Image (cartoon, rainbow, N blue to C red; front, side, top):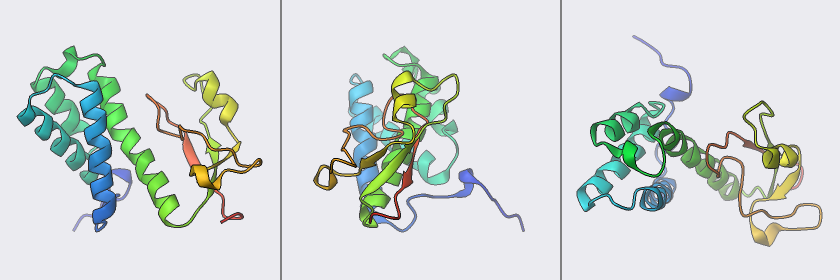
Length: 164
């Protein structure tokens, strides 16, 4: 018997139909925006493969294989960048979705602060924000963006347990 431990063995959507549907919607919008020339069949295949990759935790390998085999590298974004976005942005969306569903109102923006961290995200590091506009206060402003929601962003949310 083998036991898989680690991020690639975890299905972040397992048993959660509402979150699965919301994640499919999120993936669909991303693919529609970044790959507008896909045919109906290719479009649906790409959504299915991306969702399956996320569910299996394969670190985007099946997305990479699909994009390369269907010559999607000629789009407006590279295969590497697309795979990172299609792997990481949905995970950030899932994290935010779960925090909201579990009645969290606020989070702290956490940036990696390495050479790849953007100056804008470096400035947000350690600051507290509201998860939804209706939770906004002077102490906790609301931002349209959230950690992990932007192109190649590796930032993450630290939930605020003190102000639920």
